[in-house]
Image 1 (spheres, rainbow, N blue to C red):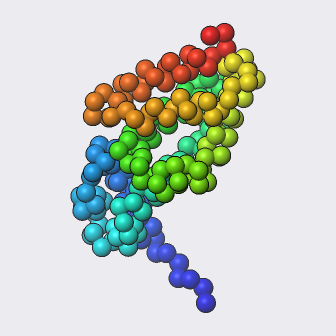
Image 2: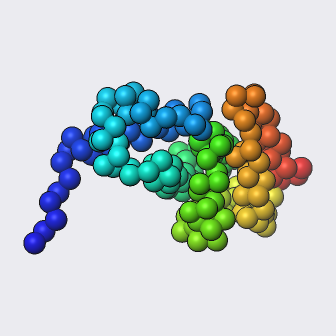
Image 3: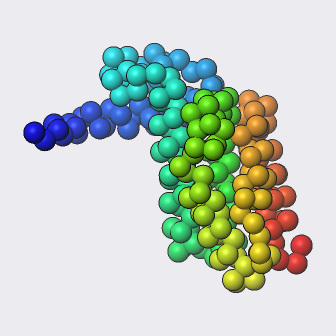
Length: 184
């Protein structure tokens, strides 16, 4: 017996819920599920069918967004010089950091503090691709450790968006990129 395929409207509802939740949680980590459902144009029962708990919704946002970041690195390199691709990618990471602010404890608990995170190695590999491309064209220092860069980026999850976090992220990313540049 084949499992019944998911209906198109159910997939659309799920995607709308995720998009609304992403923005709502970026504004306030305590955004209510009822408000998210209402903004997405679905009933609370529909939200719960897709995401039985708040943590399930947060973890799905994490999986979706982190995979997007992993996939973006080679796409950006295909369209931009390595230094520009790195900066654009880091800007997207900073935007993602707004989501993670306030809900990081849920993600860390679900991934055993990152130890069981299946996205860790691919995320580090995405950083490595960007760093190696920059080293190859001479715009970045050779031999940079992608895990060191990830540790630098971890400050982004601690920036409170309500207290100037976005502007601070731009300044911090500038400092990080300046430190990675060849000749710095």
